[in-house]
Image (cartoon, rainbow, N blue to C red; front, top):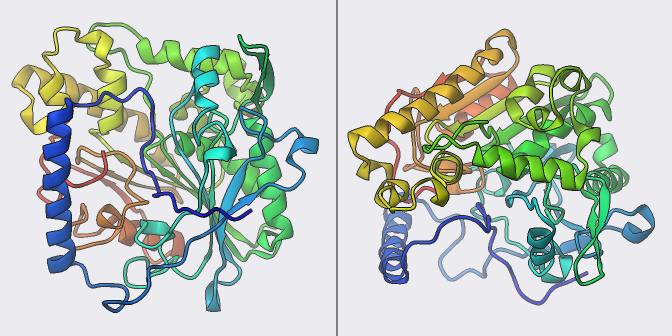
Amino acid sequence: MARTTTEPLLLLPHQQQRQPPRTNRVWGAAVAVVLVLLLSLLLLRPSRPFGAPPPPRVELTLLAGAMEKGAVCLDGTPPGYHLQRGSGDGSNSWLIHLEGGGWCSTVKDCSDRRMTKFGSSNFMRSLRFAGSGILADDEQLNPDFYNWNRVYVRYCDGASFSGDAEYQAQDGSTLHFRGLRIYEAVIDELMEKGLINATQALLTGCSAGGLAAILHCDDFSARFPQEVSVKCLIDAGLFLDEKDISGERSFWSMYDGVVQLQNVREVLPKECLVDKKPTECFFPVEVIKTIQTPMFIINSGYDSWQIQNILVPNSSAPDNSWLSCKDNIRNCNSTQIEFINGFRNTMVTNLKVLKEKEDWGMFIDSCFTHCQTLSSMSWNSPTSPRLGNKTIADAVGGWYSGRRRGVKDIDCPCPGNPTCNSLLPT
């Protein structure tokens, strides 16, 4: 189904993120635009000649037979995905990216979400993959995956492609919590379109989509013969079960609402459910303990979304004393830095489980950012974050291809890596 307009590839959609005052947003946006243009002109080699037509749109494909399969968005419309075909030696290699976009944990939140592209395909449009990091078809910017079959799966269920339930909304309409069915039906359809013949496959996701990639990683791998190289890449999906600065488990409460409302139990590790509550088993640190498929985790130790919404949600600092710090951690005072460093240390501690997984990898930088694989600036550019003089693209490509062993890089325990910059996605 073709769309007449093109939608920007949104990296960090979440309804609950606090917005700065309107005046600051206007000035900030103007400054950011100027800086981006200057950096693009001075640092980035153009991927197409001046005056050439814009890159083609990747049209939205609606899932066939969605109604019959019960694989529908929150409002009952069919889900969709964008497929850009591979070429050359990438013709039988596939990259499947699961979109992120927060969660909905109450009937009201999920009802409201139906009026957005995160709850209805009525609001989805075509996308451009050009300049979108790991999805880009530019060999210089994306050398390992540029000519693969690349798929961007839209997110319209509100529970990381994991729920399976229905609920009556207050207006009498039905809320469809069918994320698990959407994931399964989309993968089945892609199998029919050539994924079944893959010689290499990579399941990826960002934010809530990163959690989805964790939850489905082993299932995805099990669909292929053993000789196929199947791995998973998780971007900004390592959400922590941490108390906020006031001592409340506000994020747990929201997470618990998702688990209970949308019935995500089917995707949770059975080993975890033996002695833990389902909500605890929905947290990534518990899920990765059971995963057998090789996985690479990209996350900032100072994840901007998690600091703003898990560590310091608005309810935990009603006096606005954290506003400046939450906007930019370089503005934090010594007491605030102590809280933030404690959060980072918890993340690093949770990642110790990876030490026993030889074929896994990680890239944990100290930039104040969230979701780094879909932005060429953070993925692979002169201004990208670096660890050991390697960009994220270098690290991931070396790990997936086997060119590098033991790719487990963790940045210094302080916000201030000189390769971080203020234009990274937050």
